[in-house]
Length: 109
Image (tube, rainbow, N blue to C red):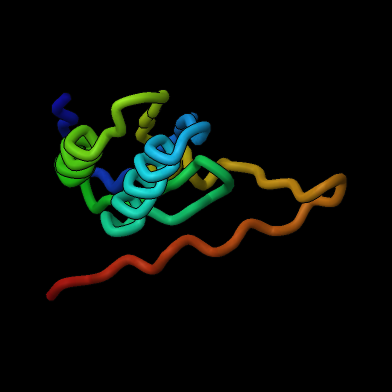
């Protein structure tokens, strides 16, 4: 899957993987550790996200994830623009708390 364009995006990886056997738990752990190694951060259980400088860069991470997919279970990937990510509303219980600040962009001169 090739994504075109130069705007910054967020990739969300959402997954439902079996953990009913020792091998399935190992596969789950391997997948999760590879997400972390690839720069993803846990947003909530089984939902991880990472910022990418461009849509082309996001395509690199899509291919990496395809290379370490576990044999069983389901993994969904979705890409959001920075603007779409900004619109996310986060609630804890019935009280709304402010969203954590977005990561700082690196500037190269």
